[in-house]
View 1: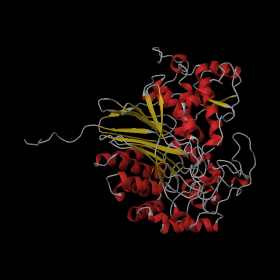
View 2: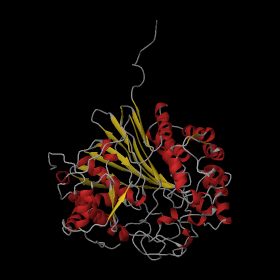
View 3: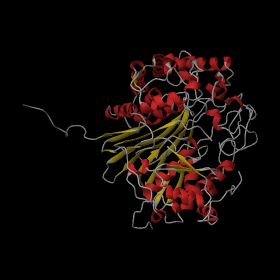
View 4: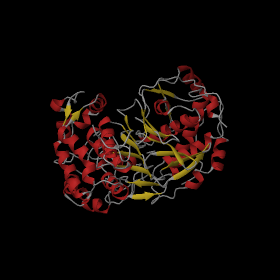
Length: 557
């Protein structure tokens, strides 16, 4: 049982406030995307309609994070309580090969470095996109509104423009050198060679026309139409590998979620090729052997245990978790509480350990997430991305579409679980998670942040269950991260804690931000919902309450 007292060593103040409603909730990392989703709910649509509308709007308002040429995962819970994961992750082109890049290092944190950054920037970094197909399939199977209606907010944003936020301006400035290499992106984001400033208006006319074509033709506009012809044509003339055959052959996968348990709650998340469902369940199994709440949030012991659990998970992840169509993933063992007990028994409280995998068998940080719920019980937690900041920094001429750099997610070294193979799905740390109590959903959450995603989602779950934080506190609380090398601590972790961790052998690095803006929804027994977004992005919850007039009501004077 959890200790009755709530103890905090790392104190912090929330910078945002939550929103509460009874008839729907949309939380995204941009206010205009949250508005687009809420329009669908107010028009009588369901959570799936709202999520897809919000994602399309994010391709306009967060062009550095997400696009129709990206990929991702959508965790959908329907009103009947059933769950499924729509996997629209990108795949390696048919012309890809395990040795297509010249590797520069095998050091932790540098394994994916290649000569001339060919897996990061430019046409050779682009994998076969899955986002558009996945979103359209989700809408067709589980939505209630036509695609043309769902696309209208995004089309209007692109055509009329929107105001650049400081966050977007900072992202443009941080990536200006790579953006300047592409004529279309340079013209759009670096007018006169200078990054767009906060308050400037960003209009994307060519992209508005592409969205209008998608509204008319559906995903076929890309996978068997003019947009696909433009993409494959650019690839052919710029050293890329994607052909029309790759686009025509792309398929999504619908997968059953991974289910774990933690202190009476059921934890539900995506299966491989995502590492989140498996390794969050694994780490919670390890932590379940300790009274984490009694140790206190941000205490040296609590952070030490989180760190050791993270290192164990990353050690196992490196050899055992990949695209299940190519690698046999030992899911049952990884989430087995007996295996967790074996690993837990090796943890030492007074020193940091180096961990090897206990069984046989890196990504970019720029992603986005939406969490949506309606009054009928449909819930969507979706993480989608073009991978790196502005993807491959390539805009397909005449379309406004920004290409992903998902090839960076593969290990460029041949002969490994995460090595490149034609048609192989990229590996991901995306964590669109849901937490149940009995048969009722209690929380849905997710965030961007690449390798830091699932460790941050784990910490939010621990914050809610062990430290009994409010939803707003749980998403804003300071985070820690390691994959076995240095231990990153956000600045709100006290210096005394950092010194104590260093004395145990942890190599400490201070970070102003670990992962990106988390957004989440909590569900109360009375049917009300609370939405929260954190300070790490432009996240905004929009809540819906009220409703139609009482049956039979009329107006008269």
